Length: 119
Image 1 (cartoon, rainbow, N blue to C red):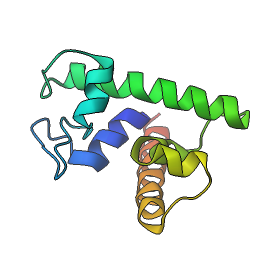
Image 2 (tube, rainbow, N blue to C red):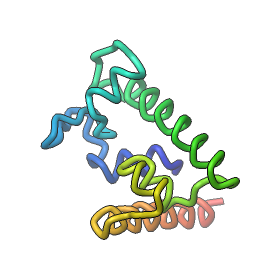
Image 3 (cartoon, helix red, strand yellow):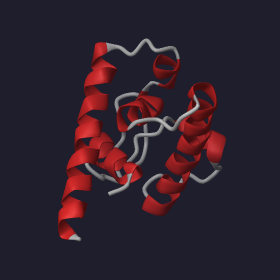
C-alpha cells in the first residue's frame, strides 16, 4: 500500500463522503482552502479527484521537506507533513500529532510487511 492509501485509511476509513468537524472533505480530509489551491473541482467524493488533490499537496510538501533536510521524509514525517506541516518543519510536533504519526507509520509498516509476504 502506498502512503496515500494509508492516509485515506487513517483519515476517513476510505469514506469518500466524510466531512470533518472543521469542514474537511474527501477520503483524505482536505481543508476546503487547500482543496481550492489545487483545483476548482467540487467533486469531493470522487476518489480519483481526491487522490489528485492529496498527491499534489503532498508533492509540494515533500519537496519542501527534502529541500530543507536533504532527505525524503520518513512515514512519521510524511503524516506530519499532511496533518501539521508547520510542526514538523519546525521540529515542534505536539503529542497529539505525534500519536497520529505513529499510527500512520505503523499502518505503513503493516501494509509493507503484508505486501512482502505475498510476493
